[in-house]
Image 1 (cartoon, rainbow, N blue to C red):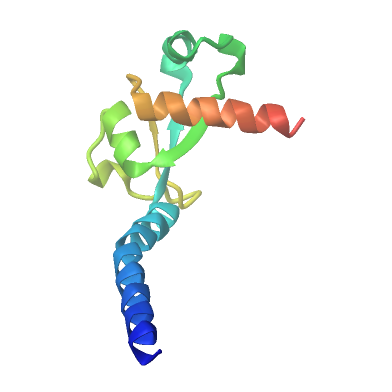
Image 2 (cartoon, rainbow, N blue to C red):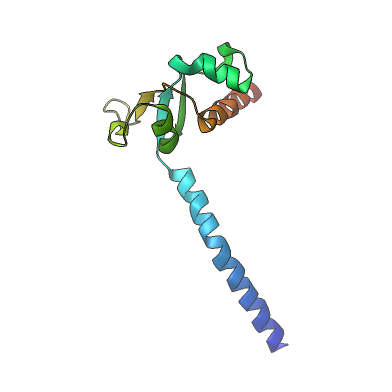
Length: 114
């Protein structure tokens, strides 16, 4: 019986150790800084890419800083928090898969809350 308890506790510790990085990555994603991206310049391109009416594309969306750096013409330093809101912002000048996915999720979220 003691051998079974030992094997069970060893398996439990191995499972806990293996899941720790996944949990840490999930927590980091939740706390990653968000950037408010203006979609004014790319609304038509996003609408076409996600096959939605351009009127459904929001004017602004909050996305992770890495996505904002891909779609806005800014550096990391350019994404410093704005003095008036504390939230960094930038205008998108191109789209990306991540931005399109975020817009799709936002449209679905706003449609389901109505």
